[in-house]
Amino acid sequence: MWYGYPATEPDGARDSEPALRRVTEVTHLDRIVNSLLETDAYKFSMGQGIYHQFSDYKTTWSFKCRNEDVFFTPEMVEEIKRQVQMYCDLRFNEDELAYLENIKWIKGSYVDFLRLWKPRFADFSFGTDDPCGLTIETRGTWLNTSMYEIPLLAIVNEVYFQMRYDHEELMASFTQRLEDKISKLKSGEYELGAFSEFGLRRRLCAEAEDLAIERLSQEEIPGSKFVGTSNVFLAKKYGVTPVGTMAHEWIMCVGQGNHKHNPAYSNWYALDAWVKEYGVLNGTALTDTITTDCFLKDFQLTYSTLFSGVRHDSGSPYEWGDKLLAHYKELGIDATQKTLLFSDSLDFARATEILRYFKGKAKVAFGIGTYISNDTFAEPLNIVMKTTACNGMDVAKLSDVKGKGICKNPDYLHYLERCIEWRMNH
Image (cartoon, rainbow, N blue to C red; front, side, top):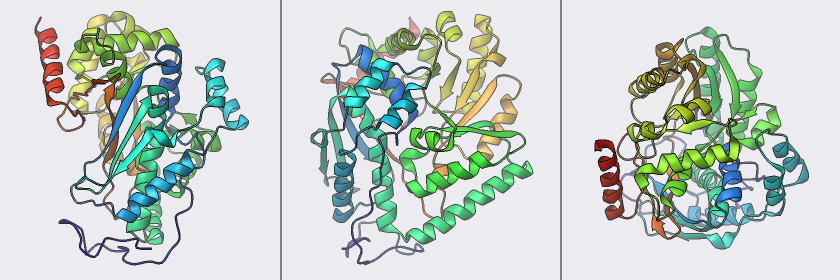
């Protein structure tokens, strides 16, 4: 089987890269996702809320590769489909369900639903009519399609790197860089405070992410504390905290998936539904789905008090943090008791600078993804799977910077922008 680039490569293919695979006779890859716990913790946080409040919602999700010089060969596409079929054969076992039920915010009714749940391959559609050579959509109930995002991205990422490069050379590069990071943490060059690993969706491979969690959970590091991972499977394996609350899909679908809702109030509907589900538990609010400025219109005294913190995912972390500190101060809330969680394209050096800027002003925490789970000589993929429709209606994300969202309908995007502008000005 051909496991490199085709004979005629698309413009931008990097011929000179080290360890680039050409023609290799190998069989199919081993199963990539081996447990339904191999997903981000916030999929269960949101999944429980979806199950109890929005079980009839239908969503469409679309894949996008943001790298301009990446191409998925037909062989890669076929392997991705095969891996997704194997993923769809998985079921939760009783040991996994018992672990979930022991998480204090997960309810027995949701665990009973998961006991019956399995992925449906019929919800997936694949194609090749994109410059990157790969299109993927999932359609079905929000209960189902929400659960597909993270395992699917992990599959796409690992298939690409396994079939594009020499795996042993990639792992050697990954291991060396991981040990270098740990050494600099122990020397004090990096200071992260509380940090977690958020890299499942773009990990080099399961082996690499497992190694990173194992090593980071073993080390005693002055000034830094590894507290957990978004990967629930590895959190269970290594006895660390499964970390994650809500994603943009929650605000997009709850706030924009009902035609009676003004989308400029998406955050209010989403926060209200979250509090109905969790009260004061599991409360880190995501601010940038329709811009942080609009979010703050709804994040007033009640929600600012109930939620233990907020998460940054786009724009300047310093401007965002200062804005949130000023907001808490205006409401009379002690910001030192609230968490500012940073999760946007972080490496250890950038996180160190952010920690030192906000230290003493609030509780500071970091969710660090690709830099932990896929740091090698090869450029990582920038791939996403985003909600593009809910209940037959367009939905969109308008983050604090351009280029981080997906919306298939420019007219809807313009409508959303006008709704937000009207609200902000009136």
